[in-house]
Length: 241
Image (cartoon, rainbow, N blue to C red; front, side, top):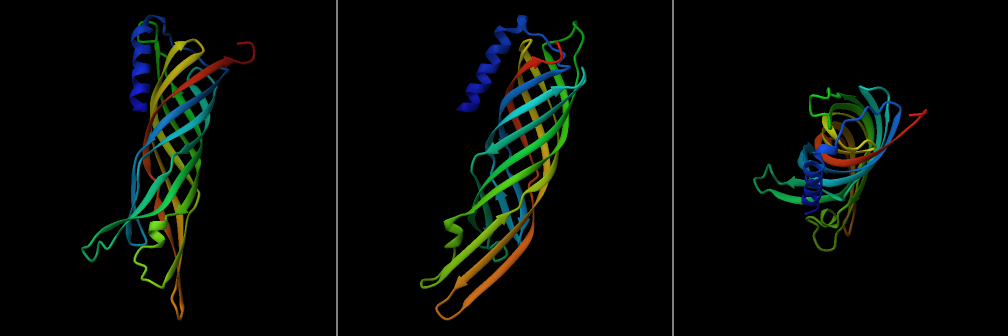
C-alpha cells in the first residue's frame, strides 16, 4: 500500500507540474535526502543447506555533493526491516522442510559516485539520468529464532544455538534519474545491484541427560541482491552558489 502511495504521488507531481520542472547543475551544491527501497530476496547455500533471505523494505538517509556538472559523490546509511533467514533441511532425504534460522537486519553504509548527464534545452531537461557505482560496509545483526533452537529436539534434551552473520564489504552498480520539481528539490528513482560475501558461524550445544554434544561450523554466505527505490533530495549551494 505504501508503495502505491509513493508511486501515485510522484506520478501526480510529474503530470501536473511538468511545465515547471527543470534540470539543475548541482556543482558545489550539497544535497540532503531520504529514500525508501525494496531489497530483493537472496538465495545461497551454506553448511550444505539451502538458505533464503527474503526481500524486505529498507529506509535511509543520503548526503551528496556535486563535484562538477557530470559527477557527484554520495554517502548513505540505510536500515532494513526485520528479515527472515530460512534453511531448507532434509533435501537429500527427499523430505524438505523450511526452518526459520534467525531474524536478520542489515545496515549498509555506502559510498557512491554518480556520472550525471544534463541534456540540452531541446530535450527532456527536467530529467537527469545517471549511472552509479561504489562500495560499502554491510553491518548485519542476527538473532537466532526460537523455532530453530527447538527443531528436532526430543523431550528431556536442551538445545542451544548461536548463529552469527559477520559484517561484510561489498560493491554496487546501478542507474537512476532525478526529476527536479524545483531548483532545490528533486525526486529520485534508482535501481542498484550489489554484491557482498559474509562469514557465517554457528555453534550448537545439545545437552543430554548423561552427556553434552557440541559442534561448531563456519562458512560463507553470499548477500548478492538487487534493490529498487525512490527518494527525495533537498539541495543548497556552497561557496557563493
